[in-house]
Image 1 (cartoon, rainbow, N blue to C red):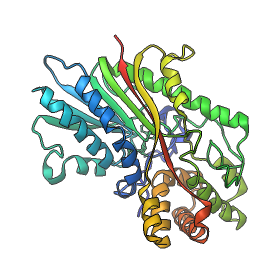
Image 2: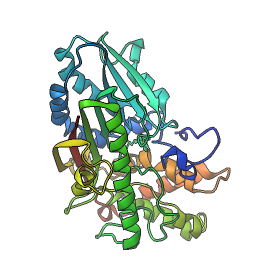
Image 3: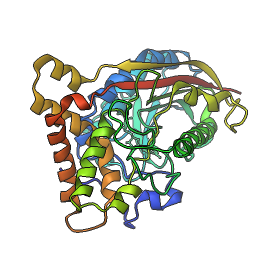
Length: 378
Ligand SMILES: C[S@@+](CC[C@H](N)C(=O)[O-])C[C@H]1O[C@@H](n2cnc3c(N)ncnc32)[C@H](O)[C@@H]1O
């Protein structure tokens, strides 16, 4: 596996505040697509809501109907979700439909385009559907005013637009370690800074989507998160933290690098998702009607498989590849730019597998998510 694309200027996005992104994207060349069945399960659980959105959005008398997905990555899940929306939408209209798949400019768009036109034909199997891709942060306006009818985002809006803190000395993830593993610390004030950044990001996201959407247009927001019961960061980040710390202990990663490194992602609870829709402290309040919202949990395929067959080797590989796909770019950018940086990254993930195989019970993993369906007022 090779690394994902870098910015041409060589800058890491977290050093460039204008990028409004803190990652260069998922691990590319099909790796994210191959390791995101769990994310698909989480999307699958909101397909009935997507159907409602596609069945009830007001249709124009002429022109083009536009569906947009923000944070589409390599596209396998984006295409499948979009196909579901089209199944409901196409029989409602004879107008042409445009699907827009959007992600940050360093995303692996080549794989996305291959997913959109396998065999040189639209993957959606209709000559009325036209697809395109847009490179840009979802925290910026990416489409003209009132040009989108149905907008959606899946498993993406937890990625922060900027790093609110320069360092996180005691752990590699803003929400802190799991209560069970407790292998580090995040100060309460630091947790607050991330919670606040997540709310401000959602406020921005809602404001720019409100500009793009037609009045009555629908916005489905879904993302992994937390409940009273569990958090989607538990297990995976405990393991990555332990693996990175092993290299700090061996002297191959400096303590300073460890303290500066964290994954700039925040696990929201449902209330934190809905607050910017209706709370007057946010500039996004009042732009949308909240049609429904909920939190939920989905099965994790590699966990279920392990429970069935006890194949620890496969479990460790699938578990680590799952989180490698969305953590690798940030980890690599956090390490000093040396000739063997990529080798070090490979070794961190290989070591994660070894730790997991030695102690599989220490890192239980569950996938919780939050979602809401909104209608653009006006
Ligand atoms: C975990 S993937 C989800 C991909 C797909 N939606 C799915 O559910 O399988 C998160 C995606 O969000 C994208 N992302 C992160 N920050 C972003 C930003 N500021 N603007 C747009 N996309 C962003 C990443 O590049 C990545 O492709």
